[in-house]
Image 1: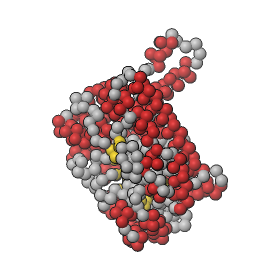
Image 2: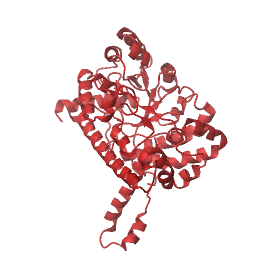
Image 3: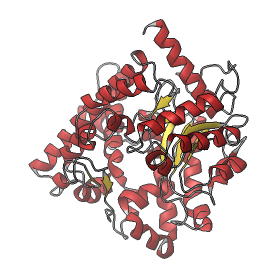
Image 4: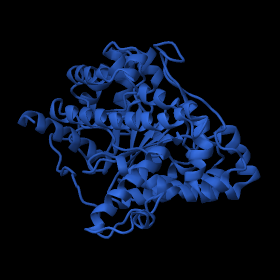
Length: 457
C-alpha cells in the first residue's frame, strides 16, 4: 500500500473508531451505509450490482473519487448467483423477479410451523435439513434427490466464491482507495431469526400469545450459534464493528412490555458476548426504536453504534444515549431524495450544532443513504459536515487494531454435527498426530453448519 494511501486509510478509520468510542475526533465522521447509492451513482441498475461483481469495484472507485471525504461505507453485498444456486426464496431480486431498476424485496412466509419449535431447539441440524431447507430452497424440495445434492454443492461453492470476492473488495478498498469498511460480519437478534425467515410476522405475533415459553426457549437456544456464526465472518483484526440489522423490535411490532420480555434479553446476551470478545457493534435500529433504545445504556459505553432510522427522533436519541453510545443518522431520506442542497445544508448545520456536540455522532441518512438520493444533496451533506462539524485539527485517539481475543475469553461451544470421536472410531484410530487431524475435521464441521445456518434470513 502506498504510504499516502495508508495514511488516508488510518486517518479515516481513526475518525470512525473515535466517534464510536465516544472520543472526540477532529470532525464529525461521515459513514455512509450506502444502500446501493454508490452503485446507482456509478450508473448501474439494481440488477447489475446484485448480479455483476465487477460493478462493485467500479462503483467503489468512482464513489471514493467523487466523495473522498467519506470515512467508511458499507461492505455487505447481495449476490444473486448465490441465491439462484439453491433457489433461495426469501427474496425477490431485480432483473429476475422484479424490474431491473427495482430494489430487492423480502418475501414474508411461514418456513417453520407452529408445532416445530421443539425441533429447532433440540435438534437444529435435523430441523434445518428436513424442514427448513425444503421450504427455503426451491432446489431442495426433494431431500435426497440428485437436484438437492447439487444444490448444496452449488450453494457452498457460490458461498466460497462470494467470500473470495468480498475479501478482494475489502483489500482493494483499503490498499487502492484508502477506504475502511463501515462493518465486518453480521448477525440477527434471536427473536428476528424467528420473526423474519422462520415464523414470519403473522406467525410470531400469534406465538408470543399462544406459546410464549417456546419463543423464549428458542431465543435462548439460538444464542451460541448466532455468536459463533458472527465471529466466523467478523474482522479478525477487530477494526470494524459487527453489523446487526434490528427488525421486529421496532414499535409497534412489539409493545415495550413485550420487547422487554421477548426481544431484549437474548439480544443483550449476544451483544455482550461479542463485546466481551473485543468487538464493537453497529446496530441498525430500523423503524421507530424510541420506546426501546434506552436499553443500549445497559451495555458497556462506547461499544455500540446505533443507526437511528427516519421514524426515530435523532434529537431524543441524543438525549437518551449521549454519553453511553454513539448514534448515527439525522438527515431524512425525503430530504436527500426530494429536497434541495440548501435544505440539506440547514439540516446538517442543526445536527452538527446539537446532536454532534461533544462527539458520539456520525452523520448519515436514516440507517443509510437511499439509492435514489440526489448526488448534489449528498455532496451538500458532506460539505456542510466539513463546514459545521469540525471539533479540532487533530485527535488524540489511537487506532484500534487487535488480532488477539481478550485474555480468558472463550467462544460458546461450536456446533459439531458428527463428533471427532465418531469419526476416529470409524477410522479405527489414527497412527500419527491425532490433534492435527481433529482440528481440521471439527473446523469443516463447524463451517458447514455455519453455512446452513446463514440461510435463516
